[in-house]
Length: 387
Image (cartoon, rainbow, N blue to C red):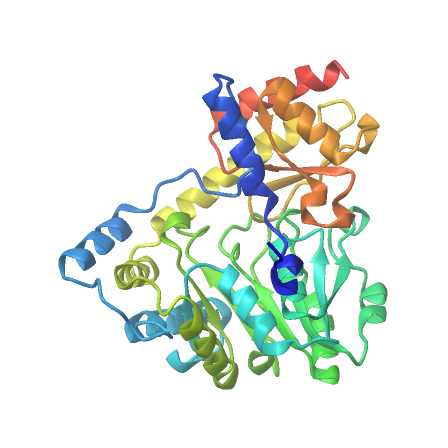
């Protein structure tokens, strides 16, 4: 068959491919420690699960408006006001089945062929994929270890051209765990305002921070109307399988997102949306409990990985990933990742899964138990010592 240019431009997310390989090895009887997938190992909070069950029993099983149930959009608006300090109306909120749709909708609504979009590299692979799908040109913004995986302002400024229509940022970031400083955000905001550029701010890890406080670029004066906030429930509330996210943006852009939603998924499952209301308005104790456990895991895995010959890793400030420099081994990212999977039963992702600037690194997700981390570290140390 001959496939369209659009589908040929689309990329993929390597984490799921590695997960499939790891699961196949498990089916063959091999013990695997999973560090490859960025999924909380915690269960969805009980009050949220019960809200979803209750919603099904009350027959919230029909269509909702494509933009989302009004009560959930109101809850999101309240939450954004509380956490970002900006006033948001329900008309500026669009409910989506996860964050990927926000990325795709932003690229689809903003970009045309010939346009350019700047995105973080190493970064979440769907950014580059969505830009390519739109027909625009992806322009990588290098995140370098020597800058603490922040960007170089002078180099960033050089990437701006008259064709730049979109800037994508992610803080805390996947795969590095890096956080953009308020000065960085103000610098990006200034450039965006001067050049009439839209910013998509992926804030999916905003509640998983270990140092300092979270700041959104949308909170900077003059930026709310030119920012698309991407957030959701998957990481904060351990709701990955529920498929629930949202965009917060200006009313005109929100209307375009609704048009795209109508043409794709029609609406998010209504009982899932009702569970989302409970997640935002209900008790938040479990969110902080999970964050504390992630911090304990972070400290264990970072200290352990820094003891592995040829490995070095910075202490991440947010999210739940360790982005490990493996250049001291003399091997490529893929060679080390494949070696650890096949020889040690440890599933990781090569840094190149996150773009060309990820070469020389592998990513560990520490959204797993302390026991798994301890066993994984033991296996890694033994395997690398044999290289």
